[in-house]
Image (cartoon, rainbow, N blue to C red; front, side, top):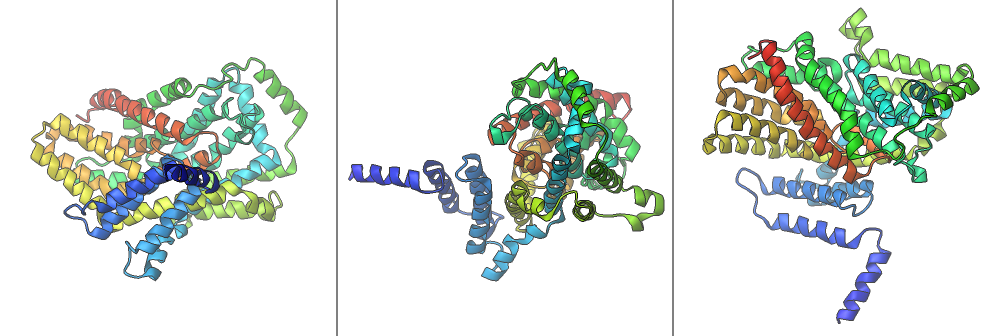
Length: 501
């Protein structure tokens, strides 16, 4: 009997399109969670949704199957279990609801637009320019990408458009110039390092400027409401408060990632000469490169909301609308064609898996799971009798690391931030409320470092294949802790100098 069981196990382990042991572990997690009675304050359906979400994350971490298949599994289970609706029709509508989310399509279109950089050769040209300027060492190229993010951040209110649509194609072009390509198994030469720098510059710059990411104005509103309008962050006040700790984070980040995920090519002594020779060989800009460059300039101006600044709010365009305009412009000018769009597998893969994770996060919010979690947190803190430093630390850390349960920064901020700010304002001494609010403000962007689904930028960069999931989560956790420490220590000193406490 035992021999038959072993033979059957070996057969299925070889035949099925998934890893059998990780699949059994994920199944055991699901069954265990489902057998646990729903906690007080949650309906059985809400608890079932929690079980489905956690199981999906476990399955993704264990790499049971490709992440897109795991996402489809979540859609199927949500639809069959009807945890979000009383009918099968309503459940499938909920399961597919996120695919109409503009943010998801912004990600997809940004990936499609980036294909034009490779096809026209403009991406290689930009990469060679960066190499000619900073290319003596790989870490220097990393600083070049970080500077690029910093320059664009004040004018690009979509961090996805900035990090995924503008900087990431440049990063890929630089990596390709060094023949560092996931398709060839050479991503470790420089690509993994540069992709991590590309990504981790994005949350830092998002924390530095009010206009650097979409949820920031909501953060300003919540801070004002929690403090009864005693602390209202203007654009200048935000930038001033975040300037010093943000610059310190940008200064250290490429070095820390260099230690955590060192590139195989550390020194590139001939890279500058090579880049200059290649630029000479390429000659002047070709017509399609000019079209691509003009499209990027148009996207940057529209993403920076320049028309609305000049002519009034009636000319404001949603970032996703702008992305579609850019894609259409590339197609009708022949810069890319429809076959290019159809063949960009990473874009459509991202659409499926990121859409499913966003759906789960949204449904957790709608079913009251997030409100239940926040309320329980408040009650536990009050009952614990902790001193105010511990209260501030717990509120910050729980808020930041609960981002593991979110696939959208906006959704996380909308669901939890006001509750946490209000608790802090009620329980902390008045003189320390302002630095707590500023730490929570920074934390609302720093938390994007954690996962490959944390914000719109992450699936674009992760989907390019340069970074494994294990490396992404490991580096993300370490960078999150380091950045929180920098803001808490140097930020607090800076805010004291500025007179906020």
